[in-house]
Image (cartoon, rainbow, N blue to C red; front, side, top):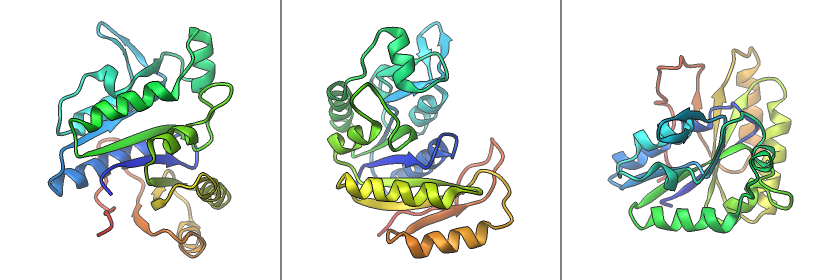
Amino acid sequence: MTSLFVTGTDTDVGKTRISVALMRLLAESGYRVAGMKPIASGCDVTPEGLRNDDAVQLSQQATVNLPYDLINPYAFEPAIAPHIAAEQAGIRIKIDVIQQHFEQIKQQADSVVVEGAGGWLVPINRTSTLAGVAVRLDLPVVLVVGIRLGCINHALLTVEAIKQCGLPLYGWVANHVEECDESAAIIATLKVAISSPCLGVVPVLADTETVTTISLLD
C-alpha cells in the first residue's frame, strides 16, 4: 500500500483531517507524499482562481510541490452537491480527467492520498458517483466514520457498498464529530461488524489540533 482513497460516512465527518494525518504518517515512513482532492465544492474566489480549503490543506501537508489545478481539477464555488454545482457551471465532471491528473501526480510522488467529497455514492454527473472514481484509480479505501447517533447504519451501508465495488477496505477511523455518550458502545459494535481494522479513534478536536491517534498497517 502506498496510495489510498479516503471516503466518509457523510459530509463533514473529518475526511480532510484524517487525510492530512495519513499523509503525515506516510511522510514519516520516508515516502514522497502528495494529496489530491479531485472534486471540491464550496471554494473561495481568489486572485489565483477558485481555491478549496480541503485541497489547500492537502497541498500544505504534501512533501512534493504540485500546481493547485493538478491537485484539484474540478473546483466549484457553491457549497452544494458537486454534480449540481457542475451542472450550474456548465461543466461535466469526467473520470478520465481525474485519472489523468492522478497519474501525473503519481509520477512525482510515491504515495497519493485521494480525498473524496461527501460520502461514497455522491453523484459526480448523471451516470457516475465518487465510487467510480475510486474504482478507476484502483485504490484501497479508508473509511472515516463520524461517530454520532445513527452512524452505525451509515458505516455498515458504506462498507457493503465498498465491497460491492470490489475494492479493499484498508481500514476505518472512528472520528468523534461531536460529544456522544454512547460512543464507546458504538465503536465496539463497529469493530465487531467491520472485518477491516480500526486504524484509530479520534476524540473531538479543536480546529487547530492535529490527529495523533491513528496508525498505518504494517
